[in-house]
Length: 103
Image 1 (cartoon, helix red, strand yellow):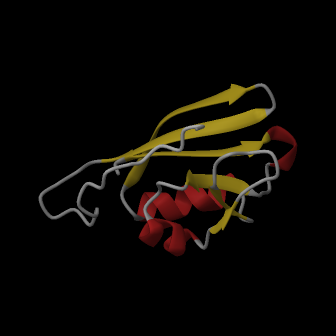
Image 2 (tube, helix red, strand yellow):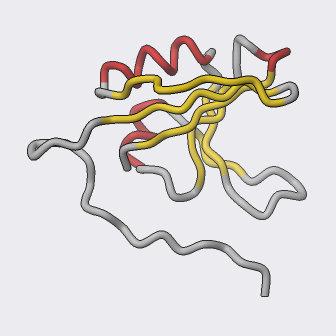
């Protein structure tokens, strides 16, 4: 998956940093040292790390990701990253994403 969003709360610039959702590449989440959790009241899972966003961005750069945008949304800082897909890319084959929809 060539796009990735990471985020943190403005008051928490030192971590934790949200690094993915339930559809994220498990190998990349393992590399980042991310833990999967479901917050009370949310109907989705997310991956997070205790590292600051700067540490996460440094790790993702080593994997070939580049920041393409950054913004503040309310009290949240969000970075959008992209990784170029090449013939010898280490990305896994495309997987069908199943969305969780209320019954």
